[in-house]
Image (tube, rainbow, N blue to C red; front, side, top):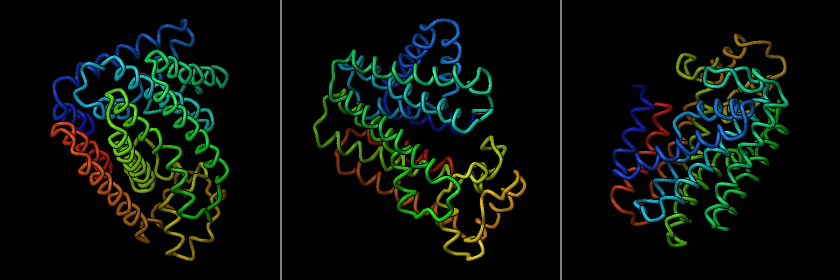
Length: 329
């Protein structure tokens, strides 16, 4: 069992006996939806969902809901919707990046072409809202809609910032909030809404999710610079080759004037990207980025402490925060 899988298993155990059954229901619903749109789109939607990773976002929905067995149908629908939106963004990102692989598997774009990939992403996105509408919760639909709009805006900003190594830290963090953290925030809010939690609890859990999502993205960007290819599944500096400017490079440019003159468009391949990664690490920028992410995780845990949650629920959410750190450690 991988360390990531072991971490998720520990979270599920800590949350209580209701969570594994709910996760299984989410998986079954995802399978049903993937196969309900004909053989062509169904094949590509199913492959995308199957490659979805640890299901962290739907797990957050279920954990934020707590032991709300009476509202389990709404929790399953919300968790399913969140994973569908996440899957849709992965398909669309692969189209924009012309990415041949996703977690070691051929992407829809590389396997079936741009048109089918765009259609698959659109299908997954639309099905997410169909799931939520069935719950009858306008608040839930609004929550996921805001997150979807944020995702699109974050992607646009990333495209606008491409190849611009002079992007300021504040702009980068705003982009991470939009593109990643808002869906984590929505996941927690949707779970709390399905459990009919108080407004204070909904807001507090949303704040926890937003911070965890932001730290998740910061550490993901650190891994692109310092992670081992065998562990991350991609060459070091993939973001640099794509022209995506992240926190390690931004901080490194502030520390080493020679890096301020680097033209990302001049990087010709993985070897040169790896060399630039070495120069970035040598400045201490990756360590500084990790320190910032760890501080954000600590703030997320402080959010939980103020909510007076049930013991098992709080422990499971704390373990989620720890699992974000484990991706880097």
